[in-house]
Length: 217
Image: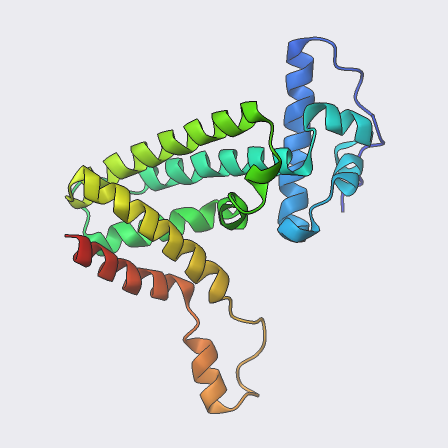
């Protein structure tokens, strides 16, 4: 395992370019920390040590834990949109589009970690400037994805906006509620094996997603 850099191992950032390098180094360490410990375990103290900066320096760049996590959320949201666009295009079947929608989120797991907490946790402790910027970025992503969805599966654009909200809720629900425990199935009773084997978030998303699209068409 790589040892973290010594605290404040970076030289003092003086220029805008140096400050941006420092900010990106903090974000890189934050992504790794969030991936390792999860949302609830994310803490600024261990992050500062991992990034090689003093806690006081960390708070100069991100005044609160929520601001840092919200910044990661916005990055992940754009990453999910890009992954979705790369794997979809006009003429796809609805089934293929929904599979790509789910798989794009799996390739950007930070978005699945942060999405359920945006309104209930993160947006409650942001600067007004970041909140406004974040709302605009969220709206821009939603508009782009809805327009792309309309062209890809042939639904009216206004319908696509509603589908986007429904599919996002379904994505969060299936990925968080249908997590199969990491246990061997063979020693378990057959009925329990069947229950655990059926806990497939991708299959559940595709099935319910088809209902949503057909109901909206």
